[in-house]
Length: 494
Image (cartoon, one colour):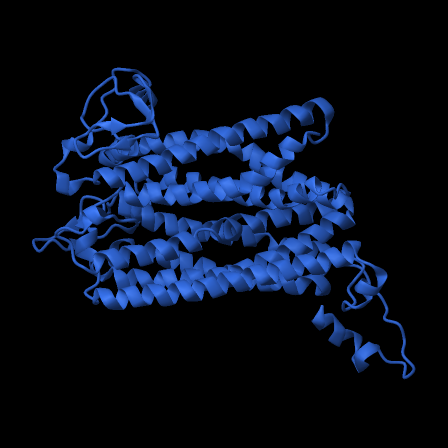
């Protein structure tokens, strides 16, 4: 939820800090979501390959990815919990009035989170203590719990965009709640599948990008090749699928949230033969500055013919629509998504063409440069997707039912500004710790793979493979393991 100075008139003073606090925590948390949703499945795909082909390199990759997955999940617990508290603390008007209607989505997400935590613990515990295929099959439900968590969150958000499943009594309070209708709203399907595929694409391109950087630095071994190929293939296959899902979602917005669509496409007046603007800025008088104008294209994209009528922002009173600044923000976010998606299709086609012709990765360094950038670009589009969803819905927190200003807390603005400063400091520390742990893990793995014999000897002993026998430590004069501990004690350190 973003805001500008134009929103300050006739609004509670606490609205601005509440918006900015929610925006910061949501923007931070959503960077972790692709890995929570998609990394379990990508890890299991590598794990399955390792077992089916008796591939020690694939097994090593799966094990290391599972460690990253666990660290990411721990950080996500912190950021997700903060968001949960903020919904009630910052927006009590919405939760108090509408919680009984759409709150089940948050309950589903909480159960999914609990199950995912248990399954991750079993998966990590099982590397040294379970039979290979038993270990794998016990982890198979893990991606399903991640998808269930996404189901709960998107069910709640799609209800905020297209609220249904209730009747208002004489006092305007929701009664006769139909839970099924409240979950499966008109926007749920398009929004859910668009979101899930975006998570898999982002995780795939980010993981592959790590190994693309290694490839560019001269690490051309099988470890980097396999670490790049599997996640990149997953992402490349899903890229054209996501483009079609995104088009379907945008068309659903056109039909179900016409004013939001007008903001996304900066359409001022209802008309046919509406042009498409690539970027550009909407002014308060309805004119558009800058951008590339393509005649009639917006009507064609919305209804497949130039005569399609597109609803404009002026179809509703000014108080019931996004401001010019908000519309421009939503429009730019939407256009960035489309632009990045189009470029990723070209990258996926480049990869497919090389694989079909040569059964090999592209040899151009430019391909790996683009692959390294693709993950970062996907993270940007994930942020842009939520900006489009939230800003385009303004001024409504529940579309056409409750304004954001009606839902905000009564807490003094000064307290909210102080809270924002504290949370920002905590998040900097949390994400700094996350990066420090990941970098330390990377250093350890690199020493194990490439380091000198003396450097490797300084590390605690590990199994030759996750399912193989532990390397026996050198006996000491007393016949004990180095450090005076047992082999089980040293395995805990590793």
